[in-house]
Length: 103
Image (cartoon, rainbow, N blue to C red; front, side, top):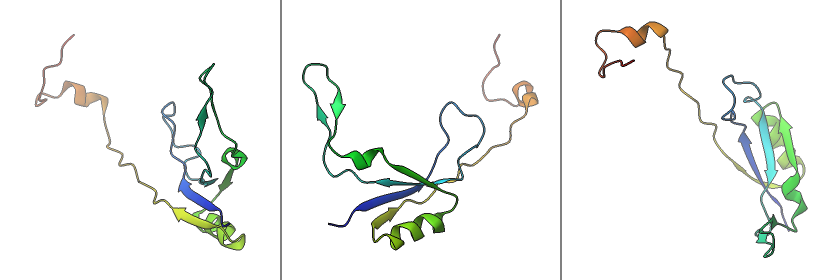
């Protein structure tokens, strides 16, 4: 049985304003089985322990080389680039704003 890996670039969390740790590439194992819900408490569990493993690499090529070296099949997800729109505080007071500025 050949294991399937998922390789992607880590996104920034919603709690971050900066871009720290977004350049790292993550390798995760695809789940072998579905999660099950424990009926009494409602907790979700899985017998698949590989789901707990996350490997981090500095570049995409290192992550792909790891997968090939160990004989894993892998799916490479393209990194989406975030477009930064420059903003200035003075834009709040522009006279050609579409909406009125209230308060």
